[in-house]
Length: 140
Length: 389
Image 1 (cartoon, chains in turn red, orange):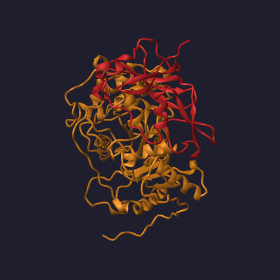
Image 2: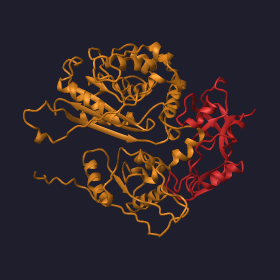
Image 3: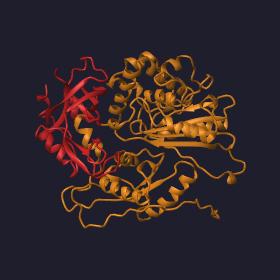
Image 4: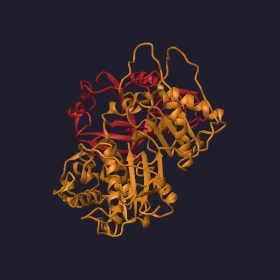
């Protein structure tokens, strides 16, 4: 179901020196997050400082890539017209197993009984030559 | 005119400074801001949670709008006063008295003022839009406010069981009230609940007619001191209370998707004014989307969280109703001239409190609650305006 994104010419991530390890890992099909060596909390999106305790001892750490659905929306008219080709598609805010939340593209059928708490797992998707961490229903 | 000497009393208690380097590597503007703030707050001997005010410069981290929210989210703080100060080389000096004035006004207690920037040798040119949302939302197919507000509305529906009909009723009332405002973009165009429900789903669950119409326009207001009221002018409308709070910038970082910092802003404004929401003659509530009005009604404490729909069933929202709400039509009926759209809620409150709102005048209007909402239910401001000081 993810082949349709390969040739989709859409804006990719504006990668910074701080976030580069995350995107490099996604391209290797690995899911890593920053974890604070002082307060122990996980951080996403990548930062230069822990938003919980302001320590700058953030360490890249392997994460599970598991998440649960917090909310979703089914896009019929995208804000960026390049996405029209794949409408309708599902956007979601997910809570990663490690705690932080992120926005992502959900590889789910809109009629598939979406609900708060639905278990999900990362699904690496090639979109216009960039690997992105989309999410899909967690396999049993 | 003589400037009155009323310098707000305040003190600088912490400083932080990064050693200048010719070129930066491996960092971002937001990172440098965070490091500067960390040093200054540590120098003050304070914890991060002591910071409830934030003053920043323009276009921080190359983000053109919602600059304080972007910085606050990065820092993990939730300031109750924040501003961009844009005075070129005078920005730093201009920040200090603004911080002091905000503290003296009771809007916050401890303000951090920060300016920082990277200088990259090569590579990344300054782009007009490089920030966490551009990096972590847009690439997934989420651009613009419609996506964020659809996600926020869906959470309210899933968490509380609120219905499409309940949200559509808000759009219906906005259009109904606009029929008494010849300036409204939808004057002469009422809208039924059924028409809202039959309008296209832009991003499910958000319908076309639940979204403000972008228009051109403008608005301004003049403020002076109680001692300098012009003689022979309109009846003055007084600011009695104000509240403000930022909790995040990106919808994914919202601490409570079905609620907003409006809860804090409204209660702070009411407390300053020493009145309650029940005392209001006009609710002038920011309405870029129907769902924002629902959440605002709940955040104002007029009903329990999740119950705006049940509450609305029992009330009437015209100028002659028991809860006059957005009597100018709101932005949903009046049109949203970008940021000026939010000012329409202030202008209508002033008209009503001057008793110059014929033919939609609220009888004996004395108090109004005005709200503003920005970004993703994340930037909130509330005012109480009244006819008596």
